Image 1 (cartoon, rainbow, N blue to C red):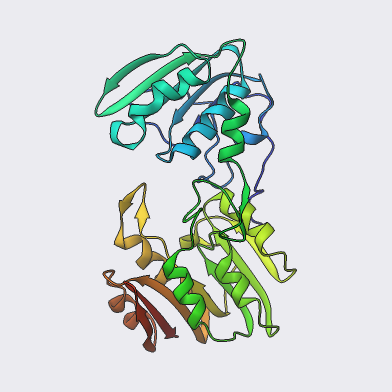
Image 2 (image 1 turned 30 degrees about the horizontal axis):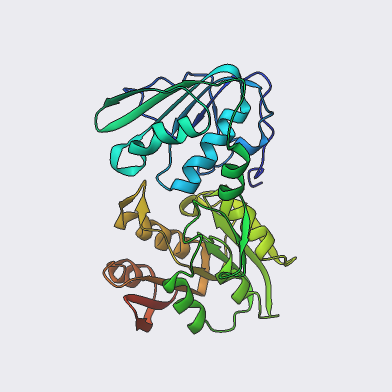
Amino acid sequence: MSPDPNPAPSSASASVVYGTPSPELVEAGADALQTSPLVPGSTALEALAPESLERAVMAAPPGTLERRYVQALALRALKPGGELIVLAPKDRGGARLRSELTGFGCEVEETGRRHQRICRVLRPDTLQGIEAATGAGGPQRLAGLDLWTQPGVFSWDRPDPGTQLLIQHLPSFSGVGADLGCGLGQIARAVLASPAVTEMTLVDIDRRAIDAAARNVPDPRARLVWGDGRVTPELSGLDFVVMNPPFHDAGVESRGLGVAFVTRAAALLRKGGVLWLVANRHLPYEDSLTRLFTRVAPAREASGFKVYEARK
């Protein structure tokens, strides 16, 4: 079974952690409940009852709307007097932490260590601007995308050119398939336009993407899995896989990440099954594709991206 996208919080936990803050900088606590949407099976910050926590430790994300959103949710969940510790690299949002927390009505103690800013606050009785921050950073439908989306999800506020290029060149599929790293669900929605597709599994490690894809792809043939596309369970013998594989891990380019997705796709496909993928032109996936597939054909190259068709 896939993890529940919104598991209920544990009533026994009085503290939470968001992400993976360095234990050399702050101790989250062994009993802290994980709340990052990038950790499958974690509890959603949105699900925490107001004024239910004693302590929260947060490795703040770099995006402004996303960062303000999670700080606001954590403050809302803390009891008055509860402790919030937020840290981030100075050049990835850390320099703004003090002003953001002050804007919520908090008095801030700030320190710096190992190129990170670390802010500690005690939740005041009265908070300011929480509704504005949660509204701006929460799920929303953008007219320019015509999709449900949320800040923090890949390409959340603009069409991704690689995804668009792949969609433009996809054939009509049939049978059972998967989209590994489905994001908001645009590729899956295009694939499911074919009535010959009987089932499609959409996988993403970001709970927010899965939540958005569930709204963007309201098709009974679609099955949504919150999980890591490199180790997706309960899939085998697929007729097709489509994907725009990620190549950044914690903000750092990782070519091995995309190769792992290609390797997983090959393992999931039946003999004769096909993989369609798009990748940035500079990423060297050809060696992995030719090693794992019997036929590899570049289908299109444009705007810095390459589309491949690979048959097992």
